[in-house]
Image (tube, rainbow, N blue to C red):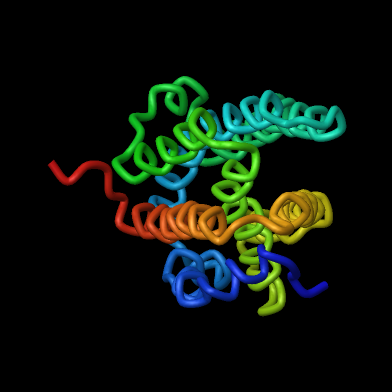
Amino acid sequence: MPDAGFYAELRNGSESIWQAIFDHPFVRGIGEGSLPYDRYEFFLKQDYIYLIDFSRVFALASAKAHQLEDMGYFAALLDATLNMEMDLHRKTCAAFGIAAKDLEATEPAMITTAYTNLLVRTCYEGTLIDILAVLLPCAAGYAEIGQNLKTRGLPEDPHYREWINTYSGEEFVSLADWLKQKFNQQTINISESSKDRLKSLYLSSARFEYLFFDMSWNTETWIV
């Protein structure tokens, strides 16, 4: 189903960012099954740290939601992330010899720190619409990346095949669709100044998605 509403406007207006993500060697490496494992392991560790703050985002979104149904949905996402997705993440890392204690001890890299700071700060300072704007590049973006890679054919490597199947799967795509729909509902008849604010938040988050892949490709922690 084609994107609609204000989300479609934001997505179409950021095509150059998403094309850069689709063409990035890290993403292409997953699709081709050629990504070196040391770079994928770096990504897994940083992504685990990211998921901790991503869980906080769902908790704060639930607190800021006005409808009980929305509160319940974000609370369910928090539970699923903390108690299922992160457990699966630990099992995936274990297959690469990365122990849970090493995951917990991972130092957030510069880009990870900056990205999660944007997410958490937006949650504290903004409204539910603001939170959705910074969530969508990750949630809807990964669904689009997964679907994009799957159309090219699945790689033989089981780890990368699983990654693509996860993010192109019905469960994850349904989450992305719900967030897009909620965002579109919340942005009907909003002011131009509000649109500008949401566009800025969305673009910042989308750029961080690119930078996160680039950081993982270069295994970059801190410049100094």
